[in-house]
Image 1 (cartoon, chains in turn brown, yellow):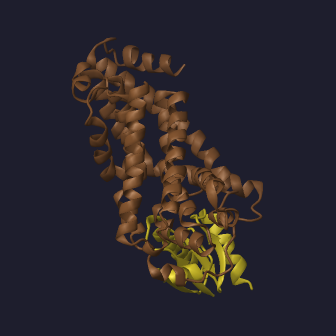
Image 2 (cartoon, rainbow over the protein chains, first blue to last red; image 1 turned 45 degrees about the horizontal axis):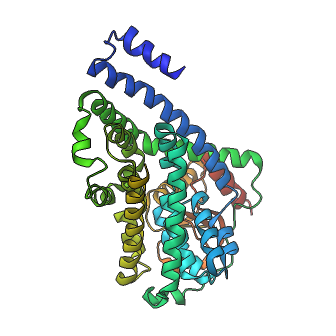
Image 3 (cartoon, rainbow over the protein chains, first blue to last red; image 1 turned 135 degrees about the vertical axis):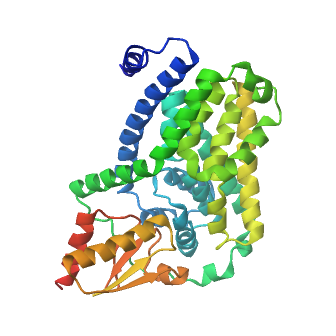
Length: 317
Length: 81
């Protein structure tokens, strides 16, 4: 139905020629814009509704004193649904440490929360389908679990800034208890509007660029430079992704076209993950609680995990 | 009434602050509003996700920006006490 609507507008109303570069570009733009915004609205609403139940305060309670593998798995899973704005990273980190959540478990959470992100998930679902979206979630979880385990094993507690251990947290908060159904719906509606307001310009710009590339860039251009055989493409994609943080929503329409034009799937995934998990602003914020050595270890382990995923998927698909 | 806004200066915290000032003006409520950016101070309230809203030393909201109506309701509830 969406497709026939895009057909109608592009070829009938605008009178563009089917198969012409401009026609293809405009069709891509109309179809993808509508599809992505529909998906964003529905999925962000559902995730936000769930978020009204799972607060960081509750997560902390569940994770406190949870050692070993199970703790890392739980932390990574919680990371998907809990609200995460990078400015909350510091109070969250301190809260976890103070509650006796082991450092490795805390890191599993810190990796998974920004990495498996609902906006990125929607974009992947809409543009690549269920299979790729699931692969994205699964590899994000695996990276979060394994990096947490490694950091736990390395016993790096002394690389956390000392003042963190001196903070005593008050026993308050937990204000989302007892929200009524109507309040939760209201909360989800508000969050959806809020996120959409923030991401829409990126999405539109990216789809426009994507549409342009879809129509005009020759197919073998990227195969030549970033196809399966190009070994350096994965690390390059990771480095490129780090400064692009705020555009997580915006890069994916471009990424889709790159993929269509022959960039390997692993390279594309590595790019996305580095955009969402290794962001400069978040590192600056985390520096407040982590000494430089621990921050560097964190970045290296996560970066290495992303590289590995990239190569692995390039080898399989 | 004493109001504290907990947050380290991100977009949402600033938004909440603006909303509080607007709501107070609109409802004609007299209050002392303070911004708390110091991490140990924020943690004292047991808040792990910012922005947080504290009225008369009690945390009434954390981790989200409320709607205008909800914020006004919260303020009115506390002004009556």
